[in-house]
Length: 253
Ligand code: URA
Image (spheres, helix red, strand yellow):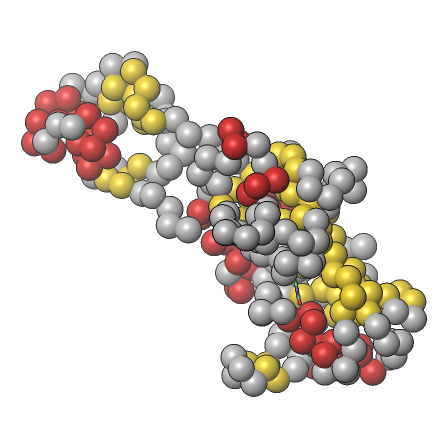
């Protein structure tokens, strides 16, 4: 999702339908305010969430939005689809403007999906160097054994992509149930990892992204805005520093 940053003169020229040279006296007179401060530098970068005013008249003021959705099974992680209900369809039409998905779940997977209009934030979330760990609860067809623990943490060779998966953590909760933590999101990754043991994944539910935990009062298909506390909990130690990846399985329970 591109982040729309423009030079101030380009932004004003488009918003006001005035040539850039025609804007010079307007800027020089301090008539343009960005986030409440008069700006005279035509080269200043304007981001999507900057508030821009001319003579007190609002030209742009868009607030960043961050939502969590409890995705039900049978819903596509997309903004539009010809055949199936999408995550976006779960929101009323009036709430959809400008939103995109920050990460996906498979059609039959359930649980935490994030929506935002902040492209920089969703990119940060997906960048491997930020290593935001995702927590899943999985039920499978065949009994689980301790062999899975070493195999998941060693990583598995994925022939199609030509990569070895990053160390993943599995904690066996019962004969057919486990928690899995991933530091990446390869195509059908969890299903393929259990597939190495010829073990079919029956249900797959995402419980958390970083320290942001699915609100279990949200029924399947329901959504709500993130609180500012939740928002800051995704990158708890700051961008790219001490991520949750590489820690033991007990670190965020
Ligand atoms: N791994 C999968 O196989 N599917 C998902 O939806 C998420 C992780």
